[in-house]
Length: 167
Image (cartoon, rainbow, N blue to C red; front, side):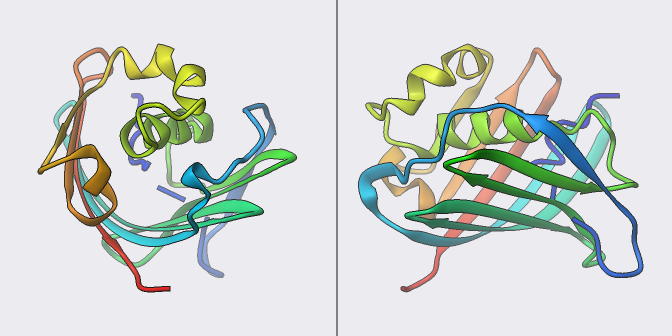
């Protein structure tokens, strides 16, 4: 079962839980979109096939890196992703499917949240083709409102409510 989007896509484990690092992840070097650092919390609820899922996600976008951490409804760390100029490092809890893919999560984040004219959009165009993304109001407001993402090819959909924290 492809649980790629216990997304967000879902990121490392608590001390009592084991985790598995992903090795050799290749993706574009990190560049801060719009040159604007952000600290964002997200509530993510979705469905993969018939399976429901929910996550609380924290994204930290800074000049030198993007760091993502996701917790499940019980507060267990699901996965972590670190994207720097050197590439991507990721860990996921052992109870998260091996099909969870850090680069795919990053591609969906870029497709949904980066400006439409950002050069990174060209790097994720293949992934963006399969996504139906609906914004509550405007794409420019996505970091502070609801975004609905649907992928009929992978049979999942999710609603993400984002709140950008004050610097």
